[in-house]
Image (cartoon, rainbow, N blue to C red; front, side):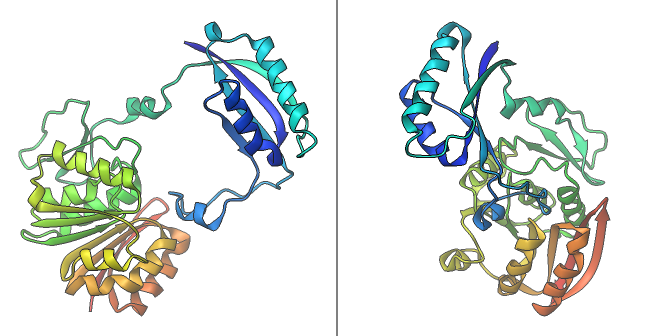
Length: 318
């Protein structure tokens, strides 16, 4: 299906009021492009370690919205938008105030990526399979994990996740207690449990991730008695710290270096002496910073694994 795309060249000062006024004429969703710098709070929610260099904020903004051709009179919409711009002009900067039309294909952006998610071997014994794909075991020892990440982070294909899975494959023992901080889709907790761990406590700040992790536990037939899912920020939430438990055999943190550093300072009480702390999501330029945090928090670095520019540091709690 084709859509008519309207692009309004305006100013960041006008975006909020434009959003309200566009809603009044039947536009229910807009897309905004601008050069406003990310806040520190926004940066903490990003799943990247190196943010792109910000462009100079010149105040310009583009507002895009889409309408079905059969339900739209483009000329009338353009006149309506021009009327709105003239109405708000005395109260805020409107920038160029021009509007253009183009045509775009209807895309299911949330689900189209699934075309590229195929079964793959994440470690010697672990195969990751999307729920919608078929897979026949290649070895009797294969451990199959089915994942539908939805919009949560973690198909297992990224280098950081694969490094963690390979570490779990090597170090998990029967009966281990696991703490998974920043669990995303729940893939690492599921891998640990299928490798023989007794219980996994999985935490994420995103409620969508927690919901997805629960669904993936069910898809993989993990009994509810074997896992605990918690939502919140382990670094700052005192109540969550109490619920996260102590004396875990293995703690996994596949997040970002800038989160691992402060997390490491408070994670040691959740581990037994001699337990393993598996940290990943560490870009090579942040490796030394994470190592310093580990040593300062009472850990001994056991091993560093690499995959392209990513690092996985495995440390022992002293």
